[in-house]
Each structure stands twice: as structure tokens, then as C-alpha cells.
Amino acid sequence: MSDDFIFTSESVTTGHPDKLCDQVSDAIVDHFLGQDPNAGIIAECAMASGVLFISAHYASKGGLAIPDVARAVIRSVGYPREVFDADACTIMTSFMDHTERDYHPLDLDALDDEGLGRVTAKDQVTVFGYACDQTDSLMPLPIAIAHALARRLDDPALEADLPYLLPDAKVQVGVEYRNGRSLRIHSVALETSQREDAGPGADRLQSDLIHGVITPVLAEQPVAPDGDTHYFINPEGPVIGGGPAVHSGLTGRKTGIDTYGEYARHSGAALSGKDPMRIDRVGAYAARYAAKNAVAAGLAGECEVQLSYSIGSAGPVSLRVRTFGTGRIDDAEIAQRLQQHFDFRIGAIVRDLRLRHLPAEHPEGFYRRLAAYGHMGRADLDVPWERTDRAPALG
Picture 1 (cartoon, one colour):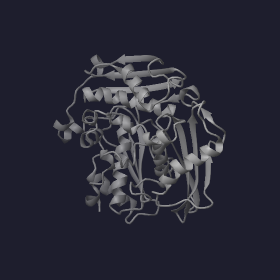
Picture 2 (picture 1 turned 30 degrees about the vertical axis):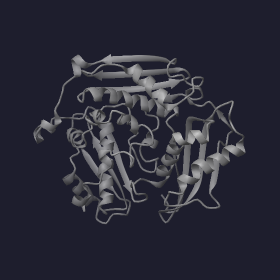
Picture 3 (picture 1 turned 135 degrees about the horizontal axis):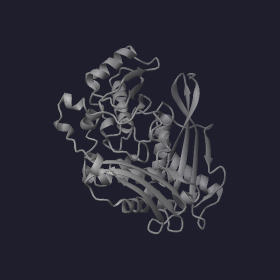
Picture 4 (picture 1 turned 90 degrees about the vertical axis):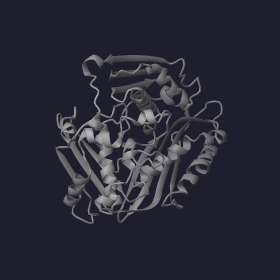
């Protein structure tokens, strides 16, 4: 990549059908783990006008209330009944109960080192973690701004000022880089849905969103727009209603939004809808944890950590670090330090980050809250893989 470039990243609001499916899937994960930390659950959703399909494979001693969980999530997003009715929509299900065959309670805290070595990955995957010094959260700036704009569009306080908006919206932010450093905000694009009977004209919509959404968010960023910044507000015309009536949704479709806004590599595997014993989910968290601590320790200005797992292996068969010329020490030395101070075995990741127990400690939902605004860089949530507690040891 040239040192002078423009990079764009996208985010979407909670009412976007893909993100709605992610939230339902992760609310189901919370539902099972909140009752039974040893539960195994894989949940996927597809959504269209008036219909939600849920597929769930589980092994658990907990109760089953999946349709109720789904309706509660849809209801909380705030669509009017005429757009998507949480209580009247059709919910189709395909449930497979594997409890008798696959339910094997395992106390990871009680296992010694040899025991953790016998807890192996059931899937094969290569995951990537990334961090850089562009923002306080050590995330790439384009996706950080995009998430901030999406969060602002979802702010309940905005509803009082702009009551014609509906929950489905998407955002794209372009940042111009010079000599590899962020220089200015090149462009902001918003596409928002609105009520048919209360929608404003194009000029008012642009004015309302620039002053009510874009300006306050951009004022808090480390780089600023200027007179040449481009603004695109519903450039293809008004989006009436939005949501599943306009475009379908699917769990796991927004992996770039969930990770680094395509600025860095990610595995492509969905993060939502999987319990913590799925290495394709928790391996991505562990890789981010390692990369963030490496940057926080001052070892590099940006860091990518690659972990490759094979079926039947407890830990990664490959660990690679790349710092793209920003490293204070050799990449191989950083990789060696990460291996010394992080345990990348799946049992150790789940144990050390307490990933099975967090839903019970957050009755309002833990994994579901990750399903919007990204799984990485969450300064608003005390997620364990965003901590920089290992940085002193790495430095």
C-alpha cells in the first residue's frame, strides 16, 4: 500500500437487517450461557419482510426460549409495527438438541497445564488480530469514526430531534492518509431510512444529519474535515421504511464491520452466534488482545498477529507477527514475547478471558452488545481482550 491513500470503512446501525440477525444470534448465545456456562450453542438467523428464520444447534442443561429472545431483540430496535412487527412476525425455527451426545461440562479453572493441553479446537481457522496507534482505542481511524456515527444515529436522544428517522442506516467514512498518517476526513456518507408520512425533503435531511449527527461526532476525532470534505446524504434518494422489508439480513455477513473495517486482515469467519469454545470466534479476540498489548507496549506503531489452528490442536500451529516497518524490535522477537506472555490454547483463552461467565455477569446481555458497533475497540464495554494489562511485561 502506498503511503499516500484514501481509505474508507463502513458501519451500520442496530436496525440494519444483517446486524439485527447478529444481535438475535448473540442474544441466544447469552441466553444459553447465562443459565449454563458449559452450554454449547451455534445460532444463525436469516431475515426478510415479516419473517425471521432461526437455526440453532445446542447442548445445554438450560431452558429453551429462543423465539421469545428473538422477539425481545427485534422489539428493542424500535421499528414501528407497520415496518417490522416483533410480536406478529413469523418466526421459523430449526433446532437440534445435541445435549445427550455432546454435553460435557468442563471446569477450565480446575485444569492443570496438562489438562488444558487436552482441550482442543473443533474447527480449523486462521484468525488475525490488529492494532495501531491511530486512535486511543488502538483501532484504525476510519472504522472508529464510522462506528461513532452509527452509534450517534442510534442514540435515543436523536429520536426526539429527528422523529422521522427509522432504525436502519449505514455509514461510510473516508480518511486521507499522507506518509502513512491520517491527515484529514475525505468523505462521509450516510444512508438513513425514514417514515413515509413524515420524511423531510433532501435539503432538510442533509442539514439535519450534518448538524445533528456528523458535526458533533467529527468534532471529537483526532483529524478534522475541511472545505473539501465530501458529504453524501441518501445520494440515491429517500429510503422509506428500510429494514427487512427492503433488504434481507443474515448472521455473519458484516465481518469487516465487526473487526477492522477492512483496514486489516480478518479471518472471514462470523463472530456472532457462537459459544466461546469456537476457536474462530475466541481466537480472533485473543489475536486482538495480543496485537493491542504489543502496540500499547511501544513495540510497534501497528501490529498484526496471525494465529492458525487445526482441528485437534490445543494451540495455534502457527503464530506470525507483522509490524509493516513500524517495529521497534524485529517482528520475530515480538512473536517470541507474545508466546511467552500469552497462552493461545483455546482452553486458556476461554479461561483467562472468562468468556463463558460474562453473560451471567451482564444480565442486559454481553455478546449481544458486541453484535453492533464492532467486536474490537470497544472502549464503551470492559471487554477483556481490549485491556492492555500485558503491555508492561511485553515492553
